[in-house]
Amino acid sequence: MKHLLDVDELSWAETERILGRAAIQRRTLAAAPAGQPAEPVAVGPATAWAAAAMAPLAGRRVGLLFAEPSTRTRLSFEIAARQLGAETFVIDPGHSSLVKGETLADTVRTLAALGLHALVMRHHRAGAPWVAARYFNGAVVNAGDGWHAHPTQALLDLFTLRRALAARDGLADGTADGSGRLAGRKVAIVGDLLHSRVARSNAWTLVADGAELRVCGPRPWLRGWDELAAELAVKLPSGRLIVTDDLSAAIGGADAVMALRVQKERMRGGLSLAEYVARYQVTDERLSAARPGCLFMHPGPVNEGIEVTHALAVGPRSLVLEQVASGVPVRMAVLEALLGGDEPTGRSIGTERAAEGLAPASAPVVDQSTRDLSSVSR
Image (cartoon, rainbow, N blue to C red; front, top):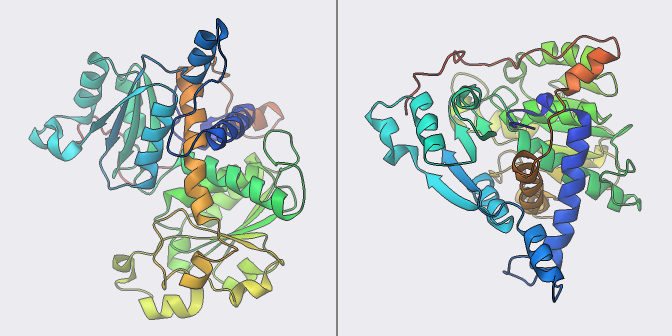
């Protein structure tokens, strides 16, 4: 792997390796004393080797450039990098030369010249990480770009969901050994699909893993999803994407339901907030139509009382905090794959399908006018 810009650029073998490594890191973190970094327990000559194994990114520098607010993603990347022994450097665009008119291309060239090995980037413009990857000679990780993609969120959601469903059904830990594949599972994503980078990336990973994914929201927020469903039907025939504005149809028989954050400004000129709550709020009562033991997910931040009730968000069905916790081991695995010497395969999920006689993956569809962002400034 050279960069992680979106999940559709990963081969499925690379996806499984990341999830498998995340499972190992999760166990390592769980074994460490509370609040302490994981440390080797070997003594004598083995200690130095073990220390190197526990700090595989020692001497590496990871930059965190977040042009939008973030709590979960930024902190989990910072914790992940430090757990692996890397140094982290936070670049605040609002206090950088971007505000003086420096282009994004010049900024990333400067960061490379300063010796950064990886750049974790969130930007309000869709496509910005692809621009950064053109001009940065290290690894670029997309931590969310506009309405377009959020690959590490999709990976941690898949990691969390596999584990939780396996635990619910009394199966083996569903990571890397195939027992946790989502074939035959039904998953619903409800809310503001139009503006959700999380949902777009999740569509690829969940469908590729064999799930029947139902996406649901007010019809104006489903624009473009019928086209994506048709594309995935060709490229990822292992699963299925269904688009509906009927919440009952989306939830019926579902193994898991994910709600998406609804922003009040999105309501202008369309469905009112009260109408949205009445028609689409996820509640325990509405989940009675789902499969018994249906799980609830949310990428956060959660607007309790809007997209979900407080009782459901913090109740026994909720995986919200488990998703947050999964962010550290999954992002550790991503940074290891990018900076730890893995050789790229050059085969994406789509190109693997093409090798089977299906259409190759297309370039990601950028929903904003950002084909060339070399002149982007804050």
